[in-house]
Structures are given as structure tokens and as C-alpha cells.
Length: 216
Ligand code: ADP
Image (cartoon, rainbow, N blue to C red; front, side, top):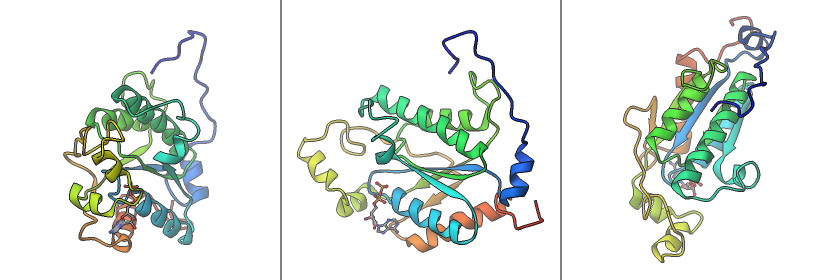
């Protein structure tokens, strides 16, 4: 998105991404978790954040419900508001990644076009991003069948949605466009939280996001 005013000029930092990487022993990135409500995004995100901190890495979770209490408190679940929700989250995640954090986002993010836009914002490849960000982006599909999510129903939302009390509920009355080629897939119906966390950390090691002192 371009600024409304013409008199806004981007100010580049003098600290480089490499400087941050050396100090933090990691490269900032975004792990974009998407999946149905109850699929396990928040649970895995929190466990992952914990595990990374215990390994001495700086990670931070941006969680859907929490962001809707503040920055996005003005947005509902209509398609337009869902898109705006994801756009704002992507902008925040891009800044966090630039600051060097392993940024874990836990949002249903049901529309493929919105996830692509998030990728564009974070990697700086989209139109209107002006090449500001050049972060690493990994799409993580928390792939859990609707029936399993519904049987878990951790927030009793499916029961309400089935009773017609929640409009636009993903999987029931609003679509979920499954990621076609995610960087990682976590099938939580058959994979424990611990295994999912290990799988993600393995991916971060393999892709050079995590480094040890003196290696970066
Ligand atoms: P979401 O953030 O995707 O809405 P939550 O993490 O809030 O989902 O809820 C997922 C629920 O499923 C939690 O109650 C969690 O304990 C449970 N669960 C059971 N097995 C798993 C698993 N393998 N991975 C993640 N969550 C699981």
C-alpha cells in the first residue's frame, strides 16, 4: 500500500541485516501459520516460541485473537475486514522480522490471495512495498481436518457456529483456501505438538535462520 501523502520519504537504517544477524545469532523471519480454528496454530506457536527461547533464540508470537484486541479491534470477520486484518499483521510481522525476531504468526488467514500479499509485504516483492522489506517468509500449513478441529472445539466456537450464532465462520459458513505449496505442513491429527515444534526448528536450521555464536 502506498502512503496517502506524497511527502513521506523512506529512511533507511544504517544498521544492516548482517549486523543484526551477528548480534542475535539468527536471521529475522516470519513463520506464517495458517489453518482452521482449532487446528493448533496458537498451541504450536506458543510451544515453538518457548522452545526457541530455551535454545537462546528470540521469537515472538503474533496471535489472531490478541491482535484483534488492539491494533485490529476495529475489524470484523467480513471478507474485506479479514483481508485488512492480514495486511496489517503482515506489515507488523515485516517490521519484527527486520528487527531480527523469529516472528510466528497464528492467524486462520483463509484466503490464498491474502497469504500471497503477506508474503509480498514481508519479502518486499509486491507492488507498493517499495522494496522496504526483504525478510524471509515461510508458509506453515497447520493441516487438521475440519472434523478433528470441530471435535476439539477449544473455544466452543464450532458449536456456536453450527447453531448459527457466529456468521462467517471459517469451515462452516466461510471458505478456507488450503495452501497449495506450503513450506511446511503440520498434520496435527497425527503429529504431536512436540514433533511439530521439532519439525519447524529443523526447518529453521536447514534454511540457515538459526546460527550459533561466531557462525553468522
Ligand atoms: P488455533 O490457534 O488453530 O485456533 P488452538 O491452538 O487454539 O488452535 O487449539 C488447538 C487445540 O487442539 C488445543 O486445545 C490443543 O491442545 C489441541 N491439540 C490436540 N492435539 C494437538 C496437536 N497435535 N497440535 C496442536 N494442538 C493440538
